[in-house]
Image 1 (spheres, rainbow, N blue to C red):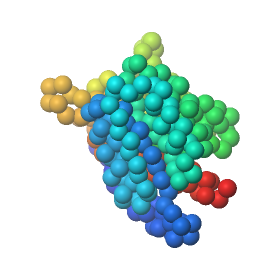
Image 2 (cartoon, helix red, strand yellow; image 1 turned 45 degrees about the horizontal axis):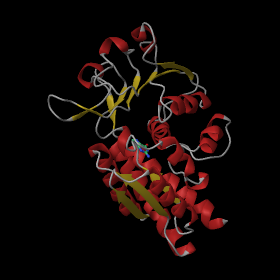
Image 3 (cartoon, rainbow, N blue to C red; image 1 turned 180 degrees about the vertical axis):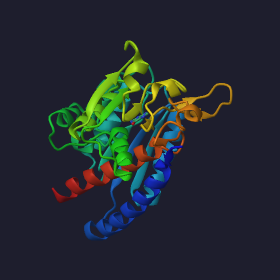
Image 4 (tube, protein in one colour; image 1 turned 90 degrees about the vertical axis):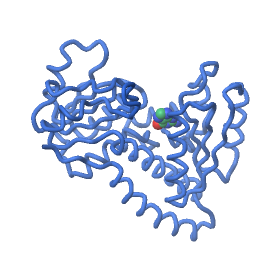
Length: 285
Ligand code: GUN
């Protein structure tokens, strides 16, 4: 039987701590941190994420502006909004909710965000900083995963970590963060052969593949720590489910996260942390 690591509870206590800090900073510097979110269209997943972000901002005392635009808006108009936010001294963090409509070049929009306001850590400069171990903004989901492991004081050093998925948002950066903590890291992906043979050697298994219940019991080592990053819709029940077959895997794992209530709340929590980080740098300049 595994211990379930509640990302929701961990995020809750971190948000209480952040709220206290933000209160002090707001009194000291005369204004609260300010996060601006751009939401284009009405993708249900994106709408729900943005609501979660708004709620967290209220809890922490961060000013939030959400700019909602229909998916008929042009790329040029989105770039103009980003530019205005870049130049607004009262805005500390800018987040463009992904995915953007198909007629837009996401990369172009993301790279237009000022690097010191890029709370997602997606700007080339922040990505380069991560890989070169320089100070920069680390993207939220990978950062949240490390905070989850630290919350159980898991000794990452020397352990074998296997990451399933090689996305720029999760798989690649979490692999780098685990490597920086001296884990031995293997990245599996859609072309990996004998994937179960590799994943079943993992002390830490991170599933970020985007396939419902992809990780089954035979793929998991007895006593592994299993982190489920997946947010999938189960088409039969219409409920959210992860990349891990929880019922099968939980009895084998030592620690496991659930979906929902695992990595998701920690991603939002780290977004709050990154916004505060940008604000402090910004306000001290
Ligand atoms: N859509 C899904 N996850 C993310 C994320 O971490 N950041 C942004 N901007 N959009 C997302």
